[in-house]
Image (tube, helix red, strand yellow):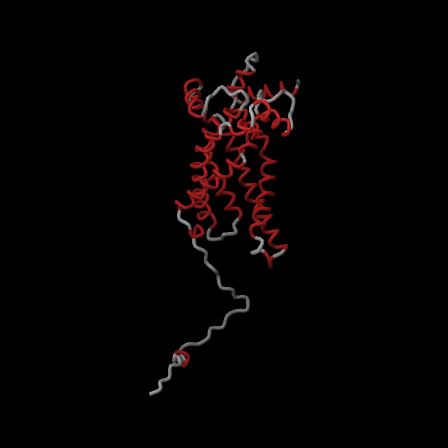
Length: 288
């Protein structure tokens, strides 16, 4: 016996097509935090931070040598001259001195950064994933929290990076700083670091979003195919601009973190400690 297997629901007059306005576009809802859990952001942030700092550590060593008073000659030196000096006197291993301190600090600091950033972004964005202001504010809050974790190890790292550093390693540096200068020495540059990294983060995120949107508008039909190129280009432009704006404060931060060591190098100068010592010494150096 044959049966009619065709669906019957279309015959019901209660089901009617609802007309939609011509500009109607259904919204696509994205899961909060991109579908990741809080602990996943912490792990991803830790790995990303460690990879970033480990890959760029030789360049960071050269930057520290060039910024620290007394670590290089009184005259300004180029990046090539600083690299040649390290290789001639210490070998390639000199470029990685202090990397242990950075590893100890970068992992927890970046875990805090990315987790705080995601929480704040969800809170401030109001459900709008394209809210650039929310991204910038979230980055500032994340920076304040992560710098509180990273600053002590960053100070240890920079003291180990200096030429003729008197410390044998990370633990030796920590013990001697605690004994000779006290716990406050680990956070001597914290305020300067915040003043540097907060605008850095704001400029970085604002520039990144602007460049990314501009690149995607140039070729919207291939935006998905060139997503990696777009992100890399936008990130490079944002990082370069933010670094150019905040480098002067980075110099101050380096010299504050290394001021005890620099005072011993410049021991013939009877100068007060802190920012006044730093400004006085920099002015003296310019006059040479």
